[in-house]
Image 1 (tube, rainbow, N blue to C red):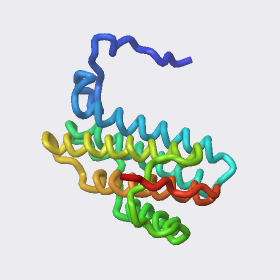
Image 2 (spheres, helix red, strand yellow):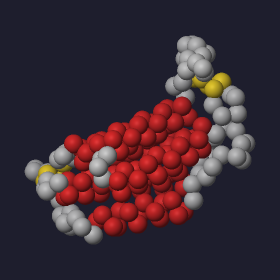
Image 3 (tube, one colour):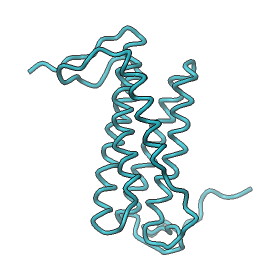
Image 4 (cartoon, rainbow, N blue to C red):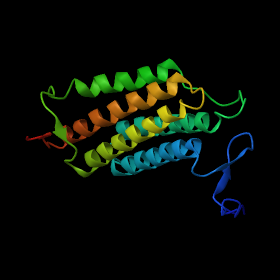
Length: 181
């Protein structure tokens, strides 16, 4: 049996793709961790949507793409060419799903509060985590060349998660919660 612990990270350092040792607080590790947290949050959302197979399937596809995002972030300091890449069609797929859900939603005329049913609330939390991951990815671009598709994917994914939250609420007859000034 493979041990899950190595004890190599006990001193606050870890290894990135290519074998370079870095502090766990470095921007690559922080950004990778944000994407990992997002992926876990989407896994929670999948579990909450266990009876809604079409949505759960879409979310599982997204989880696989988030591994691509994470591996690209982990590889920014290396010349590895074997790292899988995101393609424009991955962003286009998110846009297609957004458009499909949006067709069933009322037009937004004001800001809404995140909330509603439990699955929708998880989707809104995932959106906030996605935005945070996106901000850290942008911070990473201050230091390294980062594939533009990663930024586009996370940006579109946060839109998808927002619309998904509204869509889930609509399917459960829960109205958007209008922000009151």
